[in-house]
Length: 234
Image 1 (cartoon, rainbow, N blue to C red):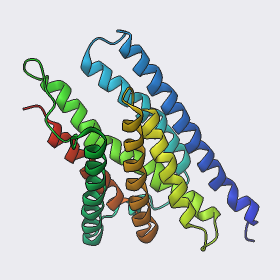
Image 2: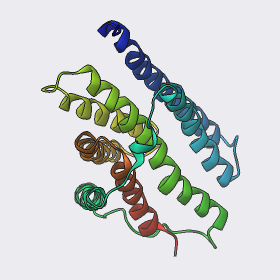
Image 3: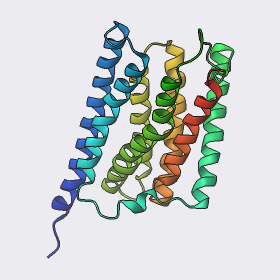
Image 4: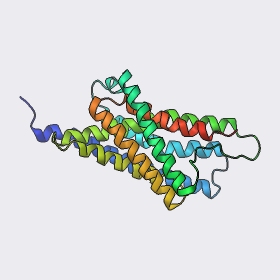
């Protein structure tokens, strides 16, 4: 006896709800941690970065574990083919080009220049920030946004409307990045939104075409790594 469509839909709906709750909690916690850091509650820069990262990572990881606890063949989601690598590189080129053009138009610089420092930069701070930005965050975020949210939304839509899952997920992805970006100007926030929305659209399309997130993780990681390497203090 096959379960009814309503029964089949319940795990999917629960997964979407769990992910949305995790995203909201992550944004709220990150803003709280950011406020504490700005008021001097976390004077150590390394502690600031770790606290800010963990405020986002922990809720997202918990949400992902809960949403995926009954999902089979999770490993296949991470498979990476040569076509995924080529597509990921193309996505990075397009998104970085758009980001550079916008930054030049708004601020007269690409934003991809070494960060000035007073004295020798902290090796521990650079290492923690680089690992978090280039490795941990791309994996967690792609699992949550493209691996769970987008795929569950797509399952709830008809074949003709499944493209909406890519758009909605990319929009949420971009809004979250704007909300967790502390400080900056309105133009800077707009640039972050456009760039991350484009990144979400392209990686989401890749996931929709391949039904795996390996290429999306690679594109996200390389996109972030370009900024880290280009702005690395010298």
